[in-house]
Length: 248
Image (cartoon, rainbow, N blue to C red):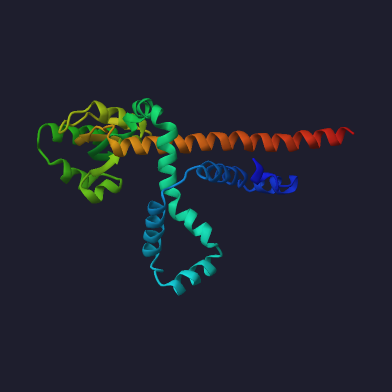
């Protein structure tokens, strides 16, 4: 990539040592790809105006002072203001044909769940509490507030709404198979014993918002993979050069 040709072997080594080489490569790749996306003049100007208003620098003097204080040019400011919109457009133009399959692969991670949880560190206690719940001797929320050991203690056991992909894989599998209101038998996950109950489960849908999100995920994944490859090539090239130099 032409913009990276200014990097010396020493600077590449230093960047790699501090884990900054790959992020730099990715940033340059993104900038290069987005440079091919041309926005309509009115759309671009509206984005810039909205960004200026959001920062509270509508006054020309405040705007100039902000640029000076942050050490960026007006062109750099404008590029930053329109970047997200360019990413959305680039993603739609280049990855829309992959969106459906990517969504199907990710769907189980995108579903939103609200569930109740009781977490204790003793199997006997967990079994006793489960029986009390099944026999309706006590309310789930009351037991969670009294006995649970995690942060759910503060919310009477309620957790969520959260994407199910953010939960422990074992717990996610239980939640996916549960019916709302059904109390699941005790299960051990790592060092804790859990009782769970699904309150609500909202399956993700491939609507316009989700299509946009999936396309951007594909864009970021592609940029990440390409940056990783180039980073490896650059570092490997230096190692080969050093090896050859040592042999001479």
